[in-house]
Image (cartoon, one colour):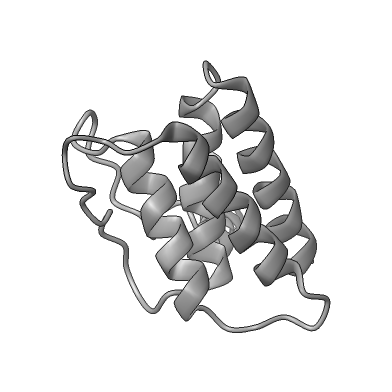
Length: 120
């Protein structure tokens, strides 16, 4: 029974994208996450349904609503190549953190939905 449990835990860890982005508590702003997600979407693979483009537009809209920051955005480090899965993880984190700005939160939520649909 133990080997089966260990195998299941290992396999669930392999399918999770949660290890791709290094979340350093308080080190990055929501704007950093959104900007990195936007750049990742620019460099990521395309999808047949156009979800990547729509997610990119929604991410840009959320960034525009947050306005300019006096501090230059820093890229959030992640493992591996820029993929839709990495962008999704960055946007999911942003979605939780941007709740106070309702319009930006709405655009971020739409971007997350587009990427989830693309990754089905």
